[in-house]
Length: 121
Image (cartoon, rainbow, N blue to C red):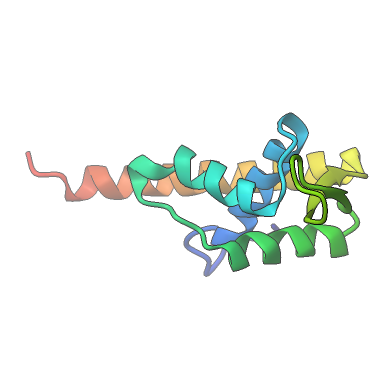
């Protein structure tokens, strides 16, 4: 994540990728289920990533050697296959999440200061 000069907020994709890593560790989902899970979790704040953002993030994690995909038959379907994801390099996954967490905490601090500054007294 590096230096902070000139950057105001963390890129949305980085946050999405870090969140996907947490979901992959705890859930056994396929692509569109990730989208639905995230939309449900963030419904109250109106964050609704589309399926292409989910897949781009998953593919970037694959290219970075953090996750792999495997195809399996969808339960209850004879011919339909779905793609599941698994973490293959826990060290890289943990490092990525740690870096994103630092940036998210920085953004949270920035937002709190901005909210306090514009609040009416």
